[in-house]
Image (tube, rainbow, N blue to C red; front, top):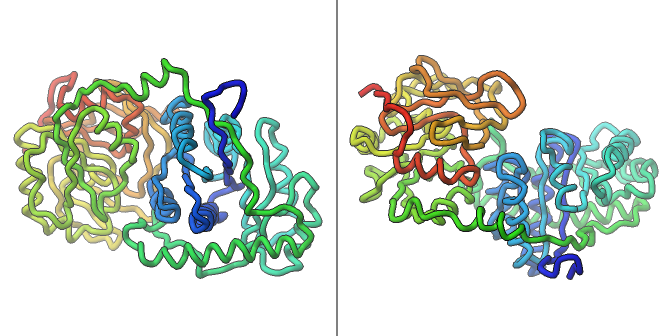
Length: 465
């Protein structure tokens, strides 16, 4: 127990970061989580940044909930409290970084430094040897406010490859594991990232188990090259602290502004980009949550007062969404009854007149808003933004590979985190609020409550009718 704060809790913790995306962070984090879970440990995993897909994979690997941590979107106090809460139940905390170690503001390195979590660097070393050591050394010494434990070399093909890397590393940046190129542990991917865990649950289970052996073999290969560190003893004790009482009151003592409000939430293979933190906040505010499937159900949950159509992959299910006319009628009836609807990204596309899918086929959608959605291959938009709503500012992020056209004049535009150009457009028709932005509800509970109550602060605009 740390004498500075008797309320702190010390737990082994490890942060996995990389020089870039695509280095194997999620595969390695998932394998580590499953390895220690198989040892009977409670492993709590966190994901840096606004990611919906990696947390699904990591949650299945660990058997525990996975929370996204973003210092800008969620706030430092909120992130601190999530880690402290996890430390109360966990035997091990793992945090997976996002993109490159220093990319973004705040970056993965900023998050690791703020909470004093030591970093294991993950790097795909295919096509290089001593250069990998140079890059790892540069990452380790770029700043002095974090601790690096060493290098996990992914795609390290031979014993000689491992030896060359190990010999080029300085003593304070040890080689931790040399992981072979192993296609059997690759996680399924598609255009926005990994495939949703719910779609490939059975396929993932053997991948996780094979991943455990992959790590064991990789650690042994590093030892054979002369490395002295032990991958499975990496996690150092880290003290996690509760936030100050005043900050805790803001986080946990949320007014019951949605007491007895029943919110219908679309959740299926087409609509699944939902932060658990958002659901938890709605329940804290007293809301009753009722889930439904626009793909499979023919009616809305009974007696719902508001709807939430979150993001997801509607472009992969255009025919089923378009042909479910009974659901169209139900949602249109709800809209025309002037009841609140929040539609984000994929939910926004669902509300347009049509959506053209990846095969360039156009499918009719709900038609609550004027305009058409069109997929556009690999080009897209992503980044942190703030929704500048009359009800209050709400932080969130955009990540999509589609565009909309033929839409009406927006209610407002989002503000990009670090760019002066307008962000995503925000549309409002009757009590429907729609945008590409994925909102992080804890960023402004009062404004979120207003959206689900339909308590708007500007004249209502009419839609298509």
